[in-house]
Length: 57
Image (cartoon, rainbow, N blue to C red; front, top):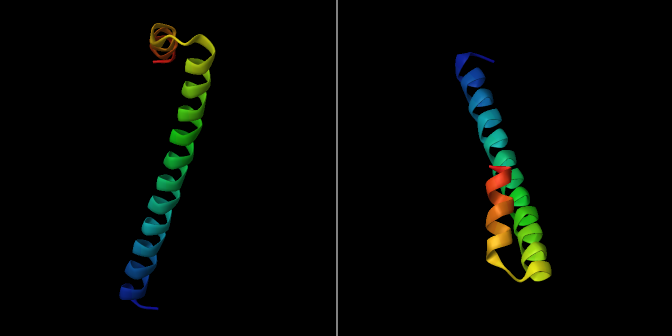
């Protein structure tokens, strides 16, 4: 493989890594949404949710 092959392989790996990161972000967002919804269902107050998010951040 020449230099074009190396560039193509590198670009392919970058694209694959970006797609995997995107999938990971969607999974994390879904888990966070489920946790937030569970907390909101339990407490029924947005104030408690705000306090929890403030502690995490």
